[in-house]
Length: 109
Image 1 (cartoon, rainbow, N blue to C red):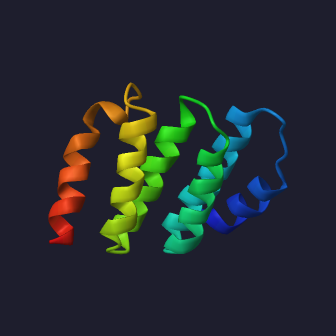
Image 2: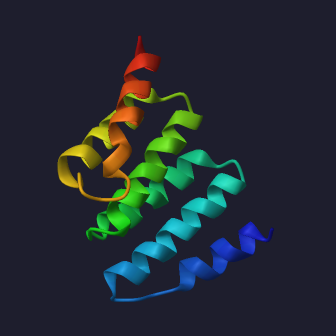
Image 3: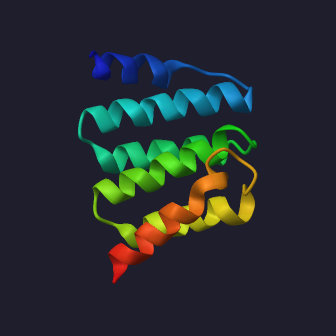
């Protein structure tokens, strides 16, 4: 429940390991979602996804897309879902991504 403190400490965290640094950025994003600061959350989820790897990148792209949905920005959510499908089809998120693509497309109509 101490999301501000979590953000403060996680921002101080430094690692050269892409997986670990990705998880730290993602945790900051999670804390911002809990605080209702979705724009900041999306920014950190994208930073986490930029640390390219097959495990965390699709997970944080998915979290960013879901947060865009919370903001009713289905166009941006769709872009990220389609990126997961194209670049990470064998990931956990990619296996069921067509359902989320269809939902986002439906919400755009």
